[in-house]
Length: 110
Length: 114
Image (tube, rainbow over all chains, first blue to last red):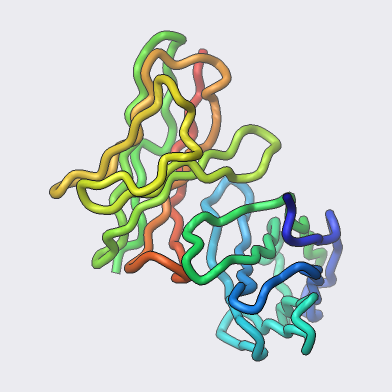
Protein backbone atom coordinates (compact mmCIF):
# COMPACT_ATOMS: atom_id res chain seq x y z
CA UNK A 1 0.00 0.00 0.00
CA UNK A 2 1.94 2.93 -1.40
CA UNK A 3 1.68 6.07 0.69
CA UNK A 4 3.45 8.29 -1.85
CA UNK A 5 3.34 8.88 -5.58
CA UNK A 6 6.33 10.19 -7.50
CA UNK A 7 7.00 10.61 -11.22
CA UNK A 8 9.21 7.76 -12.45
CA UNK A 9 11.85 10.00 -13.99
CA UNK A 10 12.89 13.54 -14.72
CA UNK A 11 15.78 15.37 -16.33
CA UNK A 12 17.45 18.49 -15.07
CA UNK A 13 20.10 20.80 -16.52
CA UNK A 14 23.31 21.18 -14.56
CA UNK A 15 23.33 24.37 -12.52
CA UNK A 16 19.56 24.73 -12.56
CA UNK A 17 17.18 24.00 -9.71
CA UNK A 18 15.60 20.56 -9.67
CA UNK A 19 12.06 20.41 -8.29
CA UNK A 20 10.94 16.90 -7.34
CA UNK A 21 7.24 16.47 -6.57
CA UNK A 22 5.66 13.93 -4.26
CA UNK A 23 1.99 13.27 -3.56
CA UNK A 24 0.97 11.87 -0.18
CA UNK A 25 -2.75 12.58 -0.07
CA UNK A 26 -3.48 10.10 2.74
CA UNK A 27 -0.83 11.43 5.12
CA UNK A 28 -2.01 11.67 8.72
CA UNK A 29 -1.29 14.42 11.19
CA UNK A 30 1.62 12.75 12.98
CA UNK A 31 3.40 11.48 9.87
CA UNK A 32 6.59 13.03 8.56
CA UNK A 33 7.80 13.40 5.00
CA UNK A 34 11.32 12.08 4.48
CA UNK A 35 13.55 12.24 1.43
CA UNK A 36 16.41 9.90 0.67
CA UNK A 37 18.42 9.38 -2.47
CA UNK A 38 20.41 6.47 -3.81
CA UNK A 39 23.27 7.13 -6.14
CA UNK A 40 23.97 4.14 -8.34
CA UNK A 41 25.24 1.12 -6.38
CA UNK A 42 25.57 3.10 -3.14
CA UNK A 43 23.60 3.03 0.09
CA UNK A 44 20.66 5.42 0.45
CA UNK A 45 21.57 8.85 1.70
CA UNK A 46 19.34 10.90 3.99
CA UNK A 47 18.51 14.31 2.53
CA UNK A 48 15.88 16.08 4.63
CA UNK A 49 12.60 15.62 6.45
CA UNK A 50 9.70 17.73 7.66
CA UNK A 51 6.34 17.61 9.38
CA UNK A 52 4.46 20.70 8.20
CA UNK A 53 6.87 23.61 8.02
CA UNK A 54 9.22 24.13 5.12
CA UNK A 55 12.74 22.95 5.85
CA UNK A 56 16.15 23.78 4.42
CA UNK A 57 19.59 22.32 4.96
CA UNK A 58 22.87 22.34 3.12
CA UNK A 59 21.64 19.79 0.60
CA UNK A 60 18.10 20.80 -0.26
CA UNK A 61 14.85 22.51 0.63
CA UNK A 62 11.57 20.80 1.39
CA UNK A 63 8.32 22.59 0.65
CA UNK A 64 5.19 21.02 2.14
CA UNK A 65 1.77 22.29 1.07
CA UNK A 66 -0.53 23.69 3.71
CA UNK A 67 -2.88 20.71 3.49
CA UNK A 68 0.20 18.43 3.66
CA UNK A 69 -1.06 16.32 0.76
CA UNK A 70 1.99 16.99 -1.36
CA UNK A 71 5.54 18.24 -1.12
CA UNK A 72 8.44 19.30 -3.32
CA UNK A 73 12.11 18.62 -2.82
CA UNK A 74 14.26 21.35 -4.28
CA UNK A 75 17.90 20.88 -5.20
CA UNK A 76 18.91 24.50 -5.71
CA UNK A 77 21.84 24.05 -8.08
CA UNK A 78 21.90 20.56 -9.50
CA UNK A 79 25.26 19.01 -10.34
CA UNK A 80 26.10 15.84 -12.23
CA UNK A 81 26.72 14.17 -8.87
CA UNK A 82 23.05 14.67 -7.99
CA UNK A 83 22.06 12.06 -10.56
CA UNK A 84 20.30 9.42 -8.45
CA UNK A 85 17.01 7.82 -7.52
CA UNK A 86 15.13 10.05 -5.08
CA UNK A 87 12.69 8.53 -2.63
CA UNK A 88 9.87 10.35 -0.88
CA UNK A 89 8.79 8.43 2.25
CA UNK A 90 5.95 9.06 4.67
CA UNK A 91 6.77 7.90 8.14
CA UNK A 92 4.98 7.91 11.48
CA UNK A 93 6.70 9.10 14.63
CA UNK A 94 7.35 5.59 15.94
CA UNK A 95 7.69 3.95 12.56
CA UNK A 96 11.23 2.65 12.23
CA UNK A 97 10.62 0.89 8.94
CA UNK A 98 11.49 2.95 5.89
CA UNK A 99 9.22 1.98 3.00
CA UNK A 100 11.01 2.68 -0.26
CA UNK A 101 8.84 2.86 -3.35
CA UNK A 102 10.12 3.13 -6.90
CA UNK A 103 11.23 6.74 -6.45
CA UNK A 104 12.10 9.27 -9.14
CA UNK A 105 15.17 8.71 -11.26
CA UNK A 106 16.74 12.12 -11.69
CA UNK A 107 19.28 12.60 -14.43
CA UNK A 108 21.29 15.80 -14.38
CA UNK A 109 22.64 16.68 -17.82
CA UNK A 110 25.57 18.93 -18.64
CA UNK B 1 33.37 10.43 12.57
CA UNK B 2 33.18 7.19 10.64
CA UNK B 3 29.90 6.30 9.01
CA UNK B 4 28.19 2.94 8.93
CA UNK B 5 30.61 0.28 7.81
CA UNK B 6 29.75 -2.95 6.10
CA UNK B 7 31.95 -5.82 5.07
CA UNK B 8 32.61 -7.47 2.87
CA UNK B 9 31.52 -5.14 0.09
CA UNK B 10 31.24 -8.02 -2.35
CA UNK B 11 30.65 -11.65 -1.46
CA UNK B 12 30.42 -14.60 -3.80
CA UNK B 13 29.01 -17.87 -2.52
CA UNK B 14 28.07 -21.14 -4.18
CA UNK B 15 24.62 -22.55 -3.67
CA UNK B 16 24.40 -24.28 -0.31
CA UNK B 17 27.14 -22.28 1.38
CA UNK B 18 26.70 -19.81 4.22
CA UNK B 19 26.96 -16.04 3.89
CA UNK B 20 27.86 -13.75 6.81
CA UNK B 21 27.39 -10.03 6.38
CA UNK B 22 28.75 -7.61 8.96
CA UNK B 23 27.62 -4.14 9.92
CA UNK B 24 29.27 -1.70 12.30
CA UNK B 25 26.90 1.16 13.13
CA UNK B 26 27.93 4.77 13.49
CA UNK B 27 29.56 5.66 16.79
CA UNK B 28 26.93 6.23 19.43
CA UNK B 29 24.21 4.42 17.49
CA UNK B 30 22.64 1.42 19.16
CA UNK B 31 19.84 0.74 16.67
CA UNK B 32 20.53 -1.28 13.54
CA UNK B 33 18.29 -2.05 10.58
CA UNK B 34 18.89 -4.40 7.67
CA UNK B 35 17.34 -3.90 4.23
CA UNK B 36 17.57 -5.98 1.07
CA UNK B 37 17.49 -4.72 -2.50
CA UNK B 38 16.84 -7.39 -5.09
CA UNK B 39 17.96 -6.64 -8.65
CA UNK B 40 15.79 -3.94 -10.25
CA UNK B 41 13.65 -3.67 -7.12
CA UNK B 42 13.30 -1.24 -4.23
CA UNK B 43 14.77 -1.65 -0.78
CA UNK B 44 12.78 -3.82 1.60
CA UNK B 45 13.02 -3.81 5.37
CA UNK B 46 14.24 -7.06 6.86
CA UNK B 47 15.00 -6.70 10.55
CA UNK B 48 15.49 -4.16 13.36
CA UNK B 49 17.85 -4.86 16.21
CA UNK B 50 19.08 -3.17 19.33
CA UNK B 51 22.05 -4.41 21.32
CA UNK B 52 21.39 -8.07 22.16
CA UNK B 53 17.74 -7.83 21.10
CA UNK B 54 15.77 -8.47 17.94
CA UNK B 55 12.95 -5.94 17.95
CA UNK B 56 11.25 -6.70 14.65
CA UNK B 57 12.15 -9.40 12.15
CA UNK B 58 8.92 -9.27 10.20
CA UNK B 59 10.73 -8.72 6.91
CA UNK B 60 13.07 -11.66 7.24
CA UNK B 61 12.41 -14.85 5.28
CA UNK B 62 11.23 -17.50 7.72
CA UNK B 63 13.99 -19.96 6.94
CA UNK B 64 17.76 -19.74 6.52
CA UNK B 65 18.04 -16.09 7.56
CA UNK B 66 19.05 -14.87 11.01
CA UNK B 67 20.43 -11.68 12.50
CA UNK B 68 22.15 -10.68 15.68
CA UNK B 69 23.62 -7.59 17.28
CA UNK B 70 25.79 -8.71 20.21
CA UNK B 71 26.83 -6.57 23.14
CA UNK B 72 30.29 -6.28 21.63
CA UNK B 73 31.09 -6.26 17.96
CA UNK B 74 29.18 -5.72 14.74
CA UNK B 75 25.71 -6.79 13.77
CA UNK B 76 25.69 -9.96 11.69
CA UNK B 77 23.20 -11.03 9.03
CA UNK B 78 23.57 -14.73 8.39
CA UNK B 79 22.17 -16.61 5.43
CA UNK B 80 22.46 -20.37 5.55
CA UNK B 81 22.38 -22.64 2.50
CA UNK B 82 22.23 -19.76 0.06
CA UNK B 83 20.21 -20.02 -3.14
CA UNK B 84 20.43 -17.97 -6.32
CA UNK B 85 17.40 -15.94 -5.25
CA UNK B 86 19.41 -14.58 -2.31
CA UNK B 87 21.62 -12.63 -4.74
CA UNK B 88 21.01 -9.00 -3.83
CA UNK B 89 22.47 -5.92 -2.21
CA UNK B 90 22.11 -5.96 1.57
CA UNK B 91 22.21 -2.60 3.31
CA UNK B 92 22.59 -1.87 6.96
CA UNK B 93 21.47 1.38 8.57
CA UNK B 94 21.81 2.77 12.06
CA UNK B 95 20.23 5.45 14.20
CA UNK B 96 20.94 6.87 17.65
CA UNK B 97 17.43 6.22 18.91
CA UNK B 98 14.29 4.53 17.65
CA UNK B 99 11.36 6.38 16.18
CA UNK B 100 11.47 9.18 13.69
CA UNK B 101 15.22 9.64 13.58
CA UNK B 102 17.05 9.58 10.33
CA UNK B 103 18.72 6.31 9.51
CA UNK B 104 22.22 6.39 8.11
CA UNK B 105 23.06 3.70 5.61
CA UNK B 106 26.23 1.81 4.91
CA UNK B 107 27.62 1.13 1.43
CA UNK B 108 26.05 -2.30 1.27
CA UNK B 109 27.21 -5.85 0.67
CA UNK B 110 26.57 -7.28 -2.77
CA UNK B 111 25.96 -10.99 -2.50
CA UNK B 112 26.23 -13.12 -5.60
CA UNK B 113 25.23 -16.77 -5.42
CA UNK B 114 26.63 -18.94 -8.21
